[in-house]
Amino acid sequence: MIAEMITSAHLAFSHISTDATGETAQYIAKQLNEGRRSMQSAYSLGLGVMGAIDELCEMVKQCDVENWDGYGAAPVTTKTFQQAINVLEALPLGTIAPTVGAEPDGHITLEWYKSPRHTLSVSISPEGELHYAALLGHKKRYGTESFWGEVPDVIMDIIRQVGL
Image 1 (cartoon, rainbow, N blue to C red):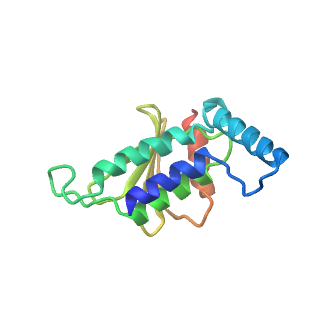
Image 2 (cartoon, rainbow, N blue to C red; image 1 turned 90 degrees about the vertical axis):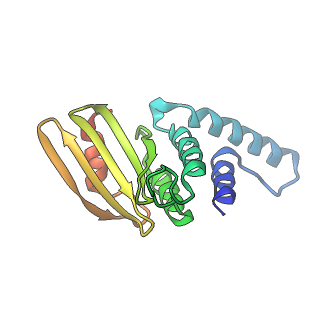
């Protein structure tokens, strides 16, 4: 199941299709695909999310079984993977893409790191809870927010404060 979701995640971010057969429709679809590929690689626009999706897909392939770390880690489930995709898709334009990791409890982590004193870690649960912890200079911020299709303002504010 996760393999199918990985394939669909890549397709959703990499190709626009059309059922139209006219020359104009095909030309527009081709132009949209070229523009989309160009924008996806433009990290300065914050559309490097495709890189994070690729990283997520590779990580999930390695972590979707019991004991993937050799210390009894829980597998990353399809539900957690989908939640992470949804969070990545919800990041607004201009947001630098995070690095991706897995946790022993089966949650997925997104991390924004500038320096040891400017960092944010967001743990995504299968239920859509976003547990976050940040260091912002000498300040610490942490908490839990629910994900309902938009990245919560408090987390977006911290991403900006990390200063990427």
